Image 1 (cartoon, rainbow, N blue to C red):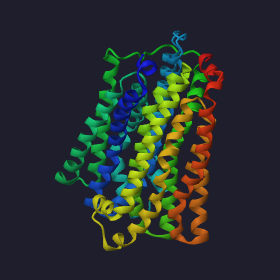
Image 2 (tube, rainbow, N blue to C red):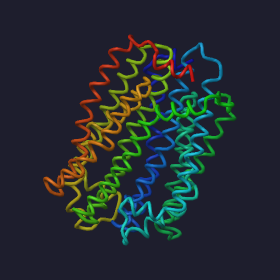
Image 3 (cartoon, rainbow, N blue to C red):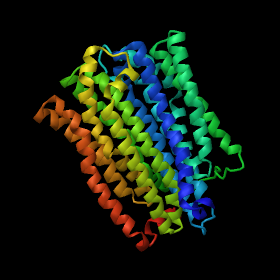
Image 4 (cartoon, one colour):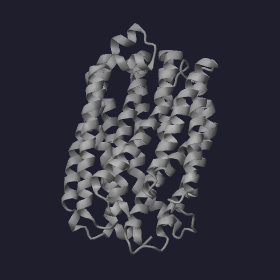
Length: 453
């Protein structure tokens, strides 16, 4: 099997190219929507999409919960050559059942409580109608986006990362064309952008389903035993990646409310653009984690410690590159992003550079912190992964978002995320160094809980 035998460098970059393309193009959905809607509706359209952003974060995070959690365990089991009793496919089946349940619950919530959700996320009377129009076509296909995330994770772990990338690439192109066609040509406005995204997501799912007819496929539905225990194990393993994404939704909601309280609608429209830039940076970090995870997980199961260390080396170099590149670009061209994403007013152009430059200092350490969740999961250290995720996604960031403007004034809230990433990175580096140093002392205690379920 290539994940256990092929040289790490070409193997890692093969998976990185596929994961990077998939992750980056996934972000195109929100990016193109923001550009098109911002040009059509102006700052109010951009602010409305900032209101909708937490809905997307929740939907994607549910797919990552079962997808990453299930696929990490799936690869760990496959890495243990003695396990050929169907445990791997039992984990896949359990993940699929869990995804179906979560998809149905979230579908019902968005279908029947869309207005209430948007108001919770900060919508007010000016922005609510626009946000509802965008969400109108999407709420009928909510399960599609959850299954897309889950299947993409399993395809990468079933030696077919290229198909996941091809699916996202195809639908990213369709979404971009559809955005322009529906929004401007047919004059549907923000509703058209939502319609294009709904169609793109559906096509993506149909493409990924072709994997089950291919010769590469080893994923099969089996009758799962110990369903509750496996579901709990998948949830524990995948929770950190789930929380990384859902935390962005929580933070967006908190920022939306604080911005409207301290800074107003213009600042919220700038923050809507920051959310999209952050999504791109986070997707770059996802791609590193998603490229490294199958290699790390299967080699952890096989106790190939040096292959794990070598994979980590390449992953950290990639993380450093993304950190430097995105921090430099956002510091140098803040108003370039503003003009790209909307038709700005003079008041927006006046406040944007300071806001973007302060907030985007967080990009220095964000990729490292996001990648660490994948690394700890791959080593079956869900406690460490959870601690990192909840600290940066809720505890530290949540406290700073409220405390900084109260103590130092409204402008200080833009430093909340840079300070959060710095504090979390201290813990990440400490834990990563400790677990990596002690890899050869592992006695497969954690792995045992996988083999015995």
